[in-house]
Image 1 (cartoon, rainbow, N blue to C red):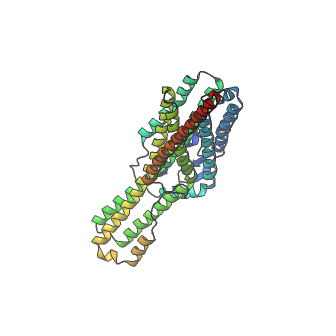
Image 2 (image 1 turned 90 degrees about the vertical axis):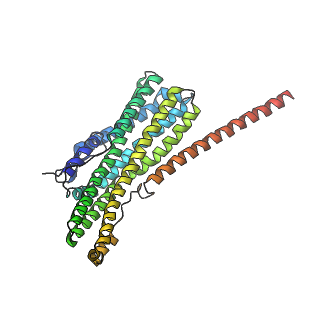
Image 3 (image 1 turned 180 degrees about the vertical axis):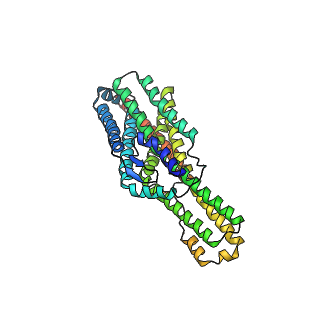
Length: 368
């Protein structure tokens, strides 16, 4: 009989399997096995995106648009699709490599059995996926009906959707981890009211260490995805802001770009908020331990318990070890995006003024 946590893990992995970003089968006991069927499906989906990208690069419409005023939009979209393609392929390869660690994390969660497990933020998911449906359709309508352009918009939509499915799978898993932290914290508070014993306290500390280990494993398994998503979000937000500024006289273009900015801000914020919530839930357990040590002097002088607390790891999420994921990173990325946006505008104005000065000099020399 599978526990509720395993059932929740299976549920949050359904969409990821159909999107081709999670080629595994989760058994009722928490074991994770590589599924040949889902692996073949992952290869087929990524092969489709590679074929569409090659088709667009070799098409006549690509050459025509590249020589027009819409060249920047096409180049940015191509860069976006290519970046998403690389991100998903890297994520699939890495998560296959980390299969055993992922199984260890699921087996840890399988030890916890309780009823109420809240998973994910439905409003943010609905907003993202509605935006991902609407924006490519708007591109097709504004650019006219063309097979290559329609196929490219479809690939752009599907690729973005699959990427966001992988992101929300990670945030949903963190939500399950949050529920486990809440469970052991509430259990500790209940035991505290009944005069907690030292073996029970040590058991809760062991549970907490296991959950922190589980969080670190999930962070490692999804590390490359988090790094590439955060970097690509920063780049797409920066260039979309510039594109809004450069083509503000075209409402359809600015609306589409503003939609992409909104979607990636939501995804970025979802990752940061999920990581911060999990860290807060882990800290709540330690706060409960601190209150208990203050109230009970006999427990506070127990060397074994003090050693377990000191040796316990602190929950922290990083983007593949490069930087810590928190609200400070979110604000820094936004500030950097605005800064680069202003720098690009300044360079454009300087180059424009330089061209005007050169034209004036040429006009003066010809008239004299």
